[in-house]
Image (cartoon, rainbow over all chains, first blue to last red):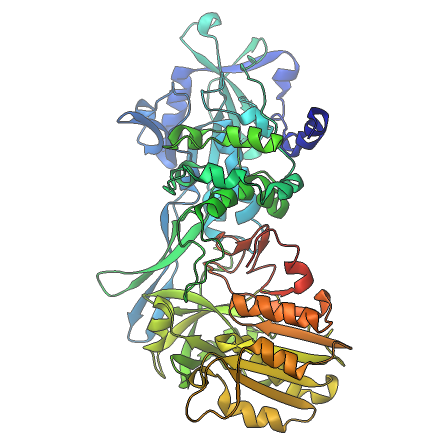
Length: 363
Length: 276
């Protein structure tokens, strides 16, 4: 394929989706609403009295989104959490319902879900990933558990100043400071002009975000949001263009080194395959559980009786990439990759999605 | 919470009987009268049946609404859920979630000749088609049923064979891969039987259901007999966890067996990226 064609092919599935957050009035005036870190911390402490506050937290040598008691536990200075925030909307395991047996027979009970939550420090890629999951879980018939968790959570985004080592969000039509998928967006601005340490520019993106702004102390200052540093984009083929490479030997070569370990799936903010299983509780009740699954697993497609339409590792690895870039966009709209690069960082044998995209573009 | 598509209805087993070796017919009456009245479905659709404590699995509905509100499922004991179901008996409570998926084009099949090809337990989702045709006999053309199993002891719905044979404008042809001492019928693959019966493609529709390998070769044979790909329908089986296009298990390329199928024309499956 010629470079010119490739450019056409790669034009935007992702780009179409890109939209910067609604500029606030002040932004249009060349001003920003700034809150100091201390004020943000005090505001979050206030929110945490009524709502569950989930925020980046240092856990051993990792940074993870975790419920925190207050702002003192928050890791404000972090690049990207080691795991996405997916688990707060699609938990790794959760109860769909339980079945209890009593005198009158079997009784099916649905669990009550968490109360209101605020998720602070969501990076634009992880926020976009929720939009990607919305396209599937909020499509009719709606997944009521996902919808409830989503509804009850207000997202406070935190713009990235630069792209991390494995990041390639810009290739998927995002930007490190993309505010379009959160309710409130915070952007770190240089501390020099402020009297008390670092500050954040606060953008209201949705009414839901505005509703939690409360008494956060904001100071209007002149200036524009800092532009994040970005790198060159990797071309991404249009969904329909992938089908012609389906039978290419590339996939078998790539799969030679795949260990089917499924780490890529577990760290992925958009992988959503799930299993459903019954668990007998000690008091002879039954819980039906939904749990994360991975299409990379052996026997994933095997049916009782033995037939397996996807028996080889190459077929399974290909399915993961095709799901993200070819099937999901056709079925649900968005590309199921946000360029967070966690799979690249975690893969023990260096299966690299950017390399795959580059290779496929030249097949 | 809104309507919960993961939550099954409760139903009571009102009948359990042997159909063939390791294959039982389960008759389920949904417990709530509203649920029972609301469970409307068409031939070809499927539902999940739960053995609580073990899990749930999808099964093609083997019954029709025309013949009553009791749901029927033919279950082959091959895995953990089916084994648990086989341990249940009359009066036991199961869960039922559905109906899901698309259905056979019964309306478009009106006035056409219908050729059904069922292999083993794959005959189960064809039974509602047979019942519909027999119950509305004047609406459809000739019904030709080709019924196959590996062994005579694995043939299902043998107790209905006489009814099918006796129905007007209806023919039943049975074959087994391997006979036994009592077997006097055809021996051989369903494709051989099909070539022998050689139904005309003129104004006809075929539906094939069985193991994937049987479906693949049956379609080839039908094509050889002159059937066009949009005259041939299949119903596919896949591992599924949700039935509503979310869990990701049953995709064939960008298609989901649960929501785009399980009924597909040969014209459709020829376009699939992945083989079933």
